[in-house]
Image (cartoon, rainbow, N blue to C red; front, side, top):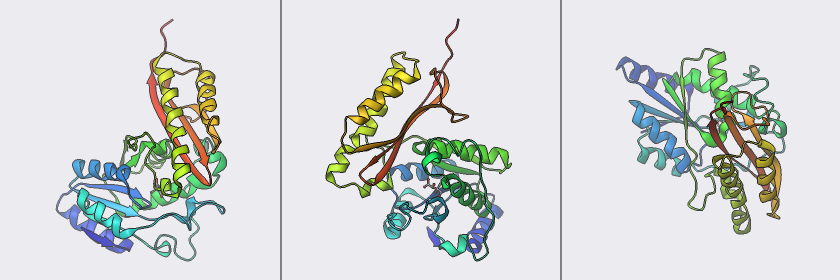
Length: 286
Ligand code: PAF
């Protein structure tokens, strides 16, 4: 496995692989890799001849009062995880490599990016779309892998690829959880012991909401209400949103039918965590 820092090095490597007729998978990450990322890398290794993992804490997707500086970084540990999972190349650029002097072109998405996380993180998805489209142009992979924990991000990237005719297949991989249910996230490391225990309220609410759907409840307000009450029972939890939306539009629904996403964002202390469930409910026949 190689570690490279420049666009030129990636392009040269990719050109060689292409000349050998090899297929390429890309796993974009911000590093501090955990089993969630590992499942994406493993999926790419299985489905492609070569796998590129990008590790880049992207400044343009963080708001002015967010955790860009504090975001955890550990390239040595990340390299070991990539190596043991079978990745072939790590692309770990400096911010100046991705955003050289004079940089002023952004990729943005309207509508989908304004809902859910977009309400409290107004520039977030513009930054994500910009860096991900750059990575697609740099690596030119056949496939790219994203976690379903960031369900809105995944939906946005799928839309961007379709709208901009980017020739890459987007693959979503299931949420990976800790044994006690907490969705894996690099930000879980911010939690102290008390907050870590309190953070379990997210998965508790998600499982309870999904159980209601599985039991046949179709009133979105009732499900969102029940989930909200569960989260409010935890004194350290501050709700950003609890919403049941249509997966394609990210707009709230009244009735649970079709491809729905139930998504939550909750602050535990200073740490903002997200979780969700997705279901495809066949419409009731009249
Ligand atoms: O999901 C992430 O880690 C980031 O948003 C991504 C897709 C790597 C873009 O910086």
